[in-house]
Length: 456
Image (tube, rainbow, N blue to C red; front, side):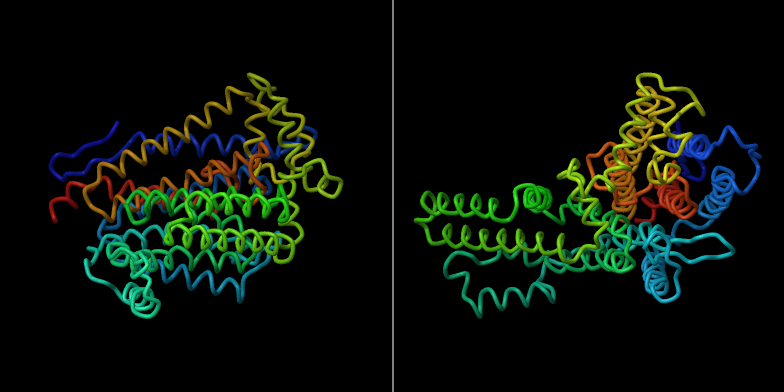
């Protein structure tokens, strides 16, 4: 499924392009279905229709793709950091002069078209992270490693009681911290804008760091444990959960606490877990905005009276998807869709339209297309010998997977409603353009992988 040119060494992945086109076309048809009103005359080429606007956005995406393919492959590597700095500057600027839409000050309005820097920051961060991880890692202690070594071993003397930090960990500490800063900087700025959903996407880069053996197994498992503990805090409450934590601590100390090292580790772990539990309660009830808190609590207590209004979107979404049955009600025949029961159905809840009008078959097809696309991207990433392209490829896969999993998860009530679009399918120019850029930069780099290999 690839086009090859033996003379130039170009190897272009045609299957990925076909999957991209399939998802975009499915999106165009379903965006039209989501806004279709049978009782009114609708001109298919009228820019008052979201589907027509999306078609125009797709036309501009084709222009961007052509530019990406024409530009020399070395530009993406050479200008990775400048592109990242440009996007960080845009995220700062939008806080100063941007427009507020749906409670998020994250939009530039240009000629009536909204541009969202947070979307473009994803591919910029992927390029910057790939560029940083491409550099050979030093086997000596870096700046941060020296600081930690000094305090842990020289000031506190932790090595004398067996808690000295391994030198290999200290050697990687600068990589952990700098990579973390590259990922966290755009995420923090996006949170300040009020767009928590887009900021969460940057957490998907943890899979990239895991693939590159920057973070170990226990750290990735720790991240999942933190997420589980978050929901346990909300489900059980601070008091009941603390009783459980203290009970496990006592049992752990009785069994393993005879050794000083084990006792210290258990005590430190208990303090960290306790601090986290109380911080979760404080953040959810005192820091989050009311609508953000309700979106989370809808998952925990959907039937509670004060959560019914927030649960409306998810309930109607599940009704729409469930009513589609096996084969769906037919294109443009969805009643939940037609009468507008599900808000934001052309953007965040576009999967409802697919589920209602095309049923289980349509849902299976769209999910299969995403899984094929993700499988293809991972295959492309794995066949790279150049670290820059491999890291960028896994970044693309991680971002698309996060969007795909969270968007579908929130439409069926498995994840809070956080306003994350379905890649290439949901309405939105910024989203379509950013995913097009994200994907086709990878295809451009992969097409020239023999040339990249030859220069090494």
